[in-house]
Length: 142
Image 1 (tube, rainbow, N blue to C red):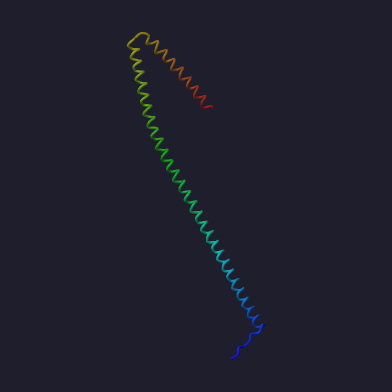
Image 2 (cartoon, rainbow, N blue to C red):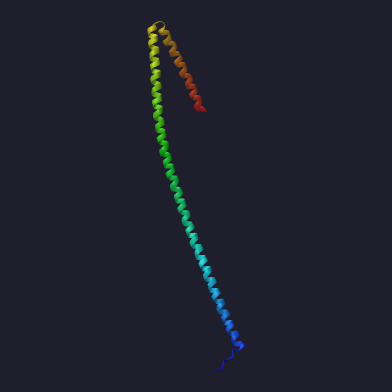
């Protein structure tokens, strides 16, 4: 059996078809690759947006909880401070009251000039009150 010789025109026609088919395959692969990259980008953007929203929600929740905790702590601290101030002020009032009572007893025991001391003490108290009232008024104005 004799082999048939393939003519140049038919081989060039075959090569041309092969090239066309190969170029079509490469175009299809490039298009498929571009489509996959576009879909991946869209997916990553969607994930990025979701993560950003989740981070915002977490930040808001964290600041809300932080503010509530601060309010509770500051409230407790203020209540404790008020209790301590009440204790100190009651102790001071008792001490001042005792000293006034002792002073009264001494004055009554001495008996001399008690009326004069009471009158001068009253004048001093009146003078002090008016001076403190002036100071308070000056503070309120400024």
